[in-house]
Amino acid sequence: MKTLYLDCGMGAAGDMLAAALLELLPEPRRMLETWNALGIPGVRFAAAPAEKCGIRGTRVSVTVDGAEEGAEADAAAHAHPHEHEHAAAHSHPHAHEHEHEHAHMGLSEIGHVVEGHLTLPDAVKQDVLAVFQLVAEAESRVHGCPLPEIHFHELGTMDAVVDIAAVCLLMHEIAPDEVIVSPVHVGCGQVRCAHGLLPVPAPATALLLQGVPIYGGTIEGELCTPTGAALLRHFADRFGAMPVMRSERIGYGMGKKDFPAANCVRALLGERAEGTEGCGADVPGGAPGLTDEILELACNVDDMSAEAIAFACAKLLEAGALDVFTLPAGMKKGRPGTLLTVLCRPAEKAAMLRTIFLHTSTLGVRESAAKRYVLARETETLETPWGPVRRKISSGYGVRRAKYEYDDLVRLAEARGCSLEEARALLEDL
Image (cartoon, rainbow, N blue to C red; front, side, top):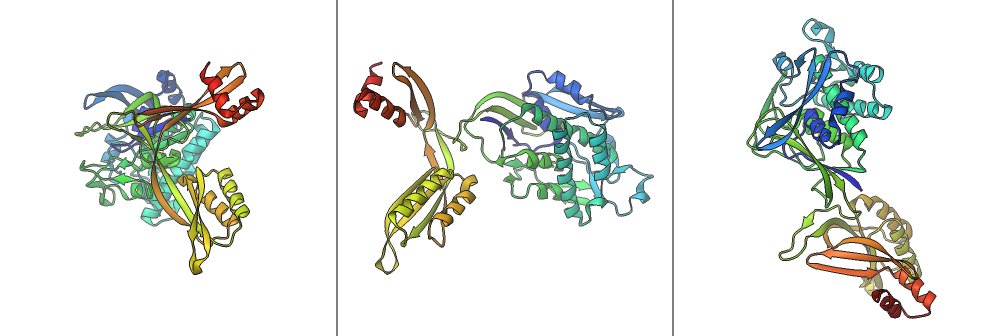
């Protein structure tokens, strides 16, 4: 499975994400040319090598009519002085009263720019608009005003449109099967904006990251911007520790400021084997193994036949259960019963519950989270005089073992008119 893992140990912003993903491409210069041909007058995208704490990476910058977003926008009376980049959003019930000070754009104007002027695939345009929608909805809830009254500063908006479009186009180009994001470092302290001093993470960022694992740490400053948070929210399939994967390319996207830690987003692109969602577990003196987060769903039944229980177990396995097993249990009033236990991944919980309630007589299901330690598994196919035979290889925790696929052994034994042990011995003698 083609997996993209984003390490946000120093937060995330649109420019940092774009730079990290850019480094994953075999020909980044060609993508730069595509960005600069997006069709926004006066906007220019540039990328240059940068170094943070001795780590080499890429920093991207956007200029609007020759000025980089940050200096002019930060000086504006009601611009958010965010560390990396933003389209600062505010509620303006009477926006016309401020037109003489700064130009602003609402969602409809942004939609016109994206739909009518950007030379992007339709799918990428929809991603760009969806990210802006997330930011606008968060700002709307924070300020307590309707979406039509949310406006973005024009200079910051052009910068953000290009950053967001760049990230969306890169995600379209890389086309990972899954995107996993680390817990997000948001920073600590306060940030000054048009409304005064606000806590870090800024209210819109906190809302966008609601339900996402985040932490403050000891570094003062806003490490994750609303734009970065919205991009992570839109593209992430899940948040958590890095899975067991074979990384093939690594990219570093650098931020503008310097901190005691390397101010960058790290992107790792590689292959992850099915069933290895957890992180590695090292065993002293042995090879690393795998860990996997699973759920145990259990229920007791005392009024089902053995045939009905067997049918329910089969249906649970068909629905995606990792394993299903039963144990005899003593029930209320001294009646013999059965304890049914289902092991599944968290993503399959809803399907498992539907199947349990449909095919058993239980009125309730208990849930327990568990960490499973497993051997890494792979299957190889051996070419033999009797046809192909699959062999499963398991390794980790200092052990390595191999086992022939049962169905293939049965086929060989039936074809030769011998026992399974004799069939296995034939293969071992090759």
